[in-house]
Length: 109
Length: 121
Image (tube, rainbow over the protein chains, first blue to last red):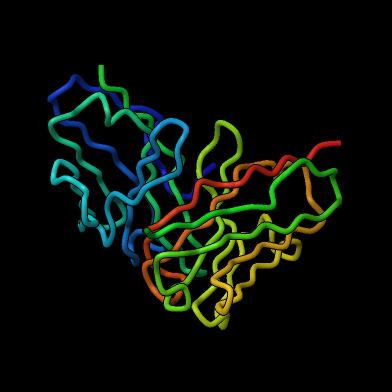
């Protein structure tokens, strides 16, 4: 049982938009920045979004992040087959431990 | 090139010990906090432990506290995880990850490829 709650799976057609939610509490998301990680099949996780809505260099602007209260959302527009991956949200809790969501598997139909 | 390379994984019997290492290159190692994150087969990510740039701030997940010890050698650009009293549930791919801050409280911007630890008799 993960501290942060994500939907197990989402799907959409190529070119469409999808959102992935991440729900937490005041002891984690409510008082800390959220980051998002993309894990392509068979590879290590990669930072996609940090500080709720910032993109590292090299991450296309098709990927966006937002946070409101104790929830965060990852948005992906112009879906490509190469976006098929597991996506994880992460933040810190009040005991200064990193917590992750259970992960969301994105399928591009 | 910024790189993290883990080593030291393998097959170990329950109750035994193992020491993982992570060699860093391409960035100023002693400017950043570092972490260990694990992923059991077919499961999600679980943070294991983190250490600040100067080893002054260290944290552990409840699942490993008292059994695992994180350390770093800034002169060798290396991060370590000493794992004692290993259990079957510690079986996972262990990733080394770089924090984007000098204290363990920010996003993980660089990840290694992982080293597999299997605990089984």
